Image 1 (cartoon, rainbow, N blue to C red):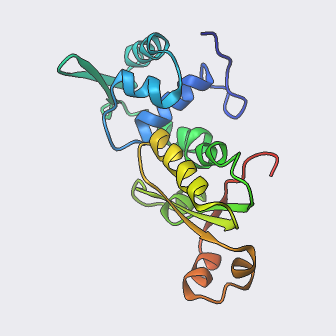
Image 2 (cartoon, rainbow, N blue to C red):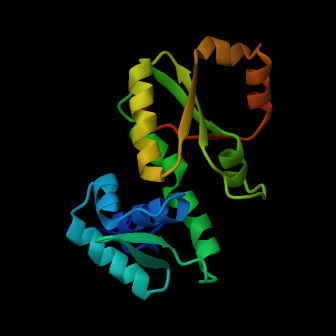
Length: 193
């Protein structure tokens, strides 16, 4: 499978490489190569080749659990934390959520809030956990849950959506919404919405 360099951050060899790094560097688990292939929608052989390249470069390490080969960031490499920051910007929650919600109807805005929004805006702090997402509009709840589950699977961490109508968001009368309006927010709207 031939892939091209991603347009957002062309320092990566391919879109698949960037997405694989996002899944491994931003996830809280040690996925197997089969897990990665399934989550990224790529052939196992292609993912295996990319894993070998990244391991040879010292960016990831692999291990075995039974017959399965697991993958994790090589935290001994001093380039991992700066690389993780680049991956967050180019392939992290903002990009993944935009893609996952692209076909969800009646969404007027998608806003990442909490720790992820703070990191996107350069605020220091520990590596964030779940992605907190404000879904503005009147989408079908099942479609929102499906999109959030899809994004969570790719990111390797929970995506917790909160749905609010455009009117409630504009008025922001509830203390929770007032707090969100004051805090860091990062727009994650898919293209074309």
